[in-house]
Length: 160
Image (cartoon, rainbow, N blue to C red; front, top):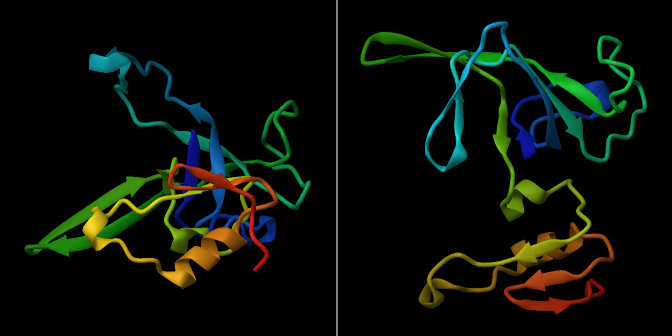
């Protein structure tokens, strides 16, 4: 599953906030059970202990020494984070893994990334759509020489 890393995890390996990856492996506590809900969704009885992601375009071949040898060098563990805040005089703490699903991404989230192909679409109602030239430039400059899909029309990357 494609994911986006939401915190600086390993600066020497260029894994910072916004890095693209694929969820590679999940470690579960012994005895964790899974209950099937509707639509073939399974819910774990315990949270995962470790998550590992395969980083896209990882420029450093250095592998993490505790990873199994058969795993690619681009696989790295994700460190859990804890956020604490006060709400109505109550202290609240949330512990979790700083990744989010990334089946799609905004133009602003694409800055600094390069993709093999992109689809540019405007999800606003037709009467609200306007062309933001800056956003369109960022979109087109983030793709390699593959086709760019704008709406339902395929075109080759224009020279910018």
